[in-house]
Length: 90
Image (cartoon, rainbow, N blue to C red; front, side, top):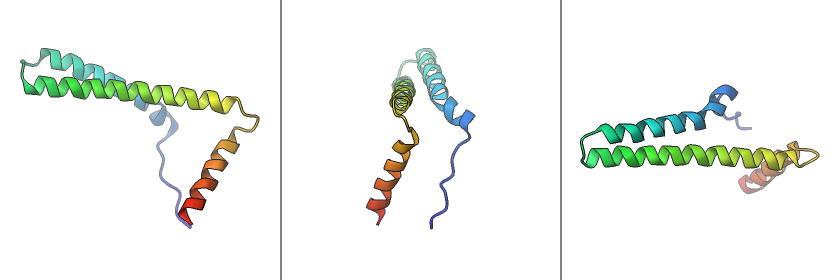
C-alpha cells in the first residue's frame, strides 16, 4: 500500500491562485519599468503567464465546486475518480 500523498494546508492551497495573480501583476508592472530589451519582454511574458495561470485555476476550481454542489452525494465524484485510477494502476 502506498503512503498518502503530501498535501498543502487548505489556507495555502486556497491562496495559491491569488499569489500567482499578484506575482503576475507585479512582474508585468516591473517589466514596464525595466529598460527596454529582452529582459523586459521575458519578465512581461512571465507575468502574463502567471496572471493567466491564476485565472485558469480560479475558474477551474469554481466550475468543479459548482458541479460538485449539483450532486446529492458530492463525494461520489472522488470515489469514481479513485476507482478509475486503481483500475489503470493494476
